[in-house]
Length: 94
Image (tube, rainbow, N blue to C red; front, side, top):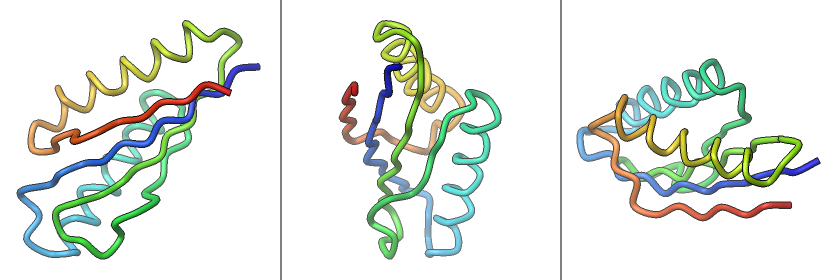
């Protein structure tokens, strides 16, 4: 069993309040779960308006598949959420 854990730091320039940010992040997390069947949660920068850190976990039977899933998710976020910028990402395989 391979687990890919990915941390994404996001910049949300359109969020004018915590309410805007939470709405956007909640939508993103739900769509990630529904589309890719991954575990996802906001893990840091909870009180910052235009910044968020999201943790993702992918379980697979092979390292290449887990890494490909993370790459696909990153591309999907950039395509479907053009107002969300991925500042940094860190992936670890366990």
